[in-house]
Image 1 (cartoon, rainbow, N blue to C red):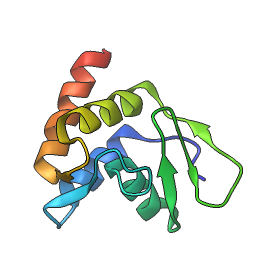
Image 2: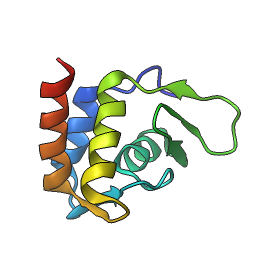
Image 3: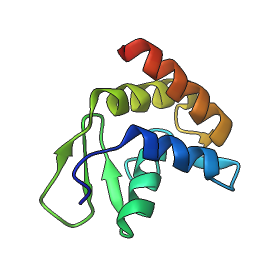
Length: 100
């Protein structure tokens, strides 16, 4: 598993994503962070409010503060709905302002 959840790599993934939607809010398997990590790791990953990990493995790691805040914002704004790429980028910017 990647040693850390890299903000710059996540932002680049969002910016380059060709589909209009990047995940589903409040879904451990399909939230934007889980979709991105699954792409990076080339195997399914899940994300909770505070941790992430590969499916079927006992290992999990803490999400950095920015990722925890991003997940909260996505869940609050989109509830159980699909998350648009442009909306995720806007929430990422808001998240960065809030955690600094």
